[in-house]
Length: 240
Image (tube, rainbow, N blue to C red; front, side, top):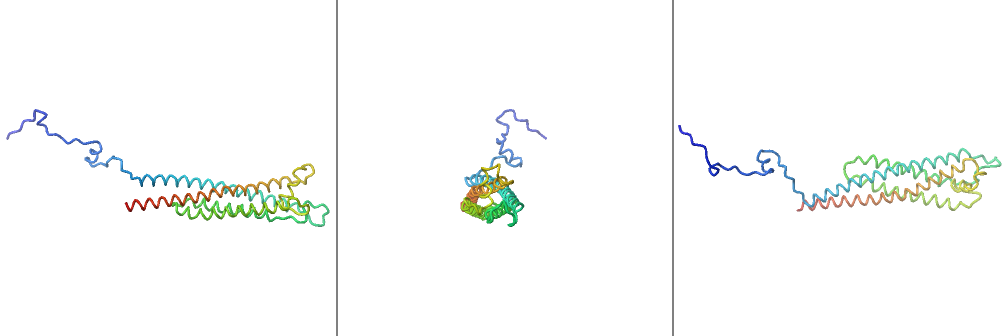
């Protein structure tokens, strides 16, 4: 038996193929570490997903703001109404604190507005656990429009009645009647300053809700725009 002598020169040594890092990993049967290729559609889809995430957190922030504002509105207006009920005297008393005709409709409208805003905000916060953007858009849009309409109606209704009775000496609302005494703290009936402050804060917060809910409507429009972009780009990618 004969054995071949080992090669003595570099030219006689068999050459192994040169493998790069990426080729070597695949050559060894390991997953390739080469970065995948991204198309422009993938980049746009990722950008829209980021926008949808930012919009989601912005909607939640607005919902928490409206929730807090709605609770404060109900608390202030209900406290003012309770103070009126506890200080209202029967007609046989010679020195009543309130006029014979006190209009409570603005206060009740503000309480109803605050309660509805609170309920709608809670509904959206609970529904924010839904996984898809379309479901959130479908839910947030009617809630935003309803809350905006309710806030505008309550603000206009309460402001119109209060301004109409502000100069009356025989009738008034809780706000108009108690706030007349704001410049006469020494002679004002006890508790009138508190009722005036609570009624004013409740009405101002309802006005503030109009602005916030207008922003919520714009966010709903942005949500539908993002969804339309994602669906269109997905369709173009499938067609391509």
